[in-house]
Length: 120
Ligand SMILES: [Zn+2]
Image (cartoon, protein in one colour):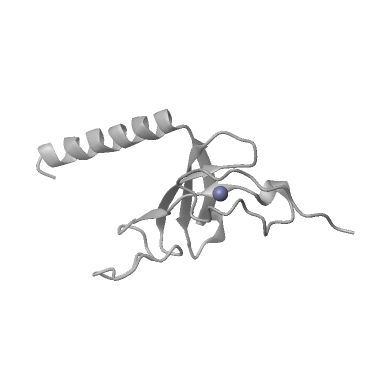
């Protein structure tokens, strides 16, 4: 006999927003926001320009808000890159706090500014 999974209170940014009643396990009742993907054009399997629609299978990083069952919200980053050498392929998830995400964003902007200000 199975019992219905407990519903959860969804975050306001959850794309499902229905309490995840369809899930069978509490560990699957997690909230996720919209995915934002940045495609990395310097990678070997980068798509040709112009990019009409961003595909999650393209090389790059996807970011989105997420909160696991009875956990705290965090910024999820998925780093993805296919490679002909399987040891160089990457598909891993990272979890960072909102403060760490802001720090990372600021560091990226600072480094990009260094390159552009040098005329690169
Ligand atoms: Zn939710």
